[in-house]
Length: 182
Length: 182
DNA sequence: GTCTATACATCGATAGAC
DNA sequence: GTCTATCGATGTATAGAC
Image (cartoon, each protein chain N blue to C red):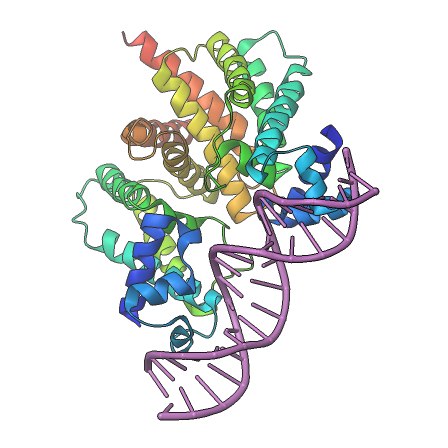
């Protein structure tokens, strides 16, 4: 079951999320296509399992970090880990953070894993002084923008993602500056 | 020909870019599916025509703007127009700015329309003091990030896009500040 | 749980008449 | 240019034997 999902990720990596078909997946795991229905009620159920698994991968990825004590540096390290995770597997990123599969909505329990990651992210942002929802939104948009621009225009490179630290510094400074003005 | 592309856009708007099938398109324009091959050599050729058309729409959209004389305000108005254009039709945005269609590469002449828009954008950015390629990249990533976050997490709303002006101000100020330090 | 067999649908593309 | 007819490939899903 877990190994089937792992093979599904391999397929997604090499042939895109659209390359994950039940026939191909079955062939890859040494079974016939109908046999997969012993593990997943439908193809959407497979995607749901992948969604939950991907979020757990992400959570494990950031939980394994040794964050610097300085909150600003901690935020940089944390976001860098996210960017690396995001860019190393575009198909996974698409499934986790974009509406790419027609009709797919994560189940309640799968969505919980996603929320867990968001909560972790917010706590790191909070420590660095990013507290207001507006500021959290902007920071997420900026980081996501780097990831998307990187994948759309220079896949595999780092023309955009290399600006991560600078943008974080700029944004944290801006928050401090605005706070001082009040 | 142009009207067929227009109907294809309608299909994309209502059923996603994946909902644009030759059968559905033919039905919508009152023809049979094989008849479309009198206008497009293949489905990818249809997408290519849509790509060129969408870029021409975008170019017309920003060319119709009366930009303020102040370069900073001009940049805000320009980017706001882009964000509005992008968010009002997610499927169009996906075709123009993401790698969503497997195997689709814009033809040389279609790509020229896209380059025309980019050149126009760069000139507006230049006037506002965004000159270095790094700065252009960052600004594009930030604006694109707002658009993507908006579409992925709050389609139809403005929770993210409303921060556009503030982010532009922040970035232009940062450029000025860095320039002063040299 | 895994198989064979098959139903059923969708889609892109071609052949050839008009 | 538009049609009918059809091919061939691909995909999800189900029935039923083992």
